[in-house]
Amino acid sequence: MIGEPEPTPRKMYWSDDVRGTRLCPDCHARLVPKQRAYLLVVRHGKSLDSRLVGSAGGHFCPACPVVVLDRKQFNDYVAASPDIRAGSSYMVPGLLDLSAVPEDKRDSPFDEVDNPLPLVRFSNP
Image (cartoon, rainbow, N blue to C red; front, side, top):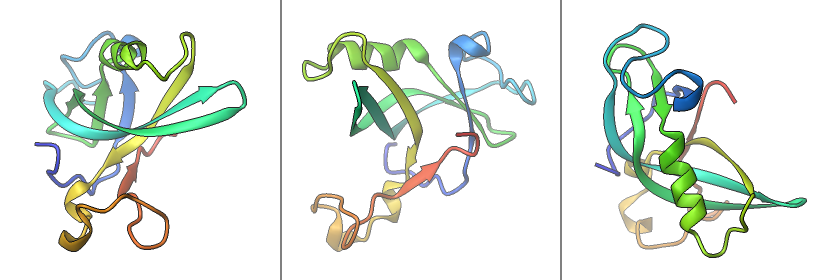
């Protein structure tokens, strides 16, 4: 579920760097795919654009704090977004702990003062 808590910072790997999404690259446990929300940051020349992305592209280790992101799923999202220019580079700095958003703020946009983005940064930027 997208709103499931993720308070633990995780070490992130891309699937093409670790030969897929089946086994944890650190402890070799079988990874579990989960639907989560991520912060995606896209570079357009010298400017950056951030957006929230719901994706099942994260494969989580049940034995240690590792997540492997499916590069193809994130590439497909970026390619399918009409407002992202072809060839733009991107990064995913972390996932969102949507359960940390106070109930009275869940229908409000995220901002830095009243409703900060509940980002759980990856431990290996």
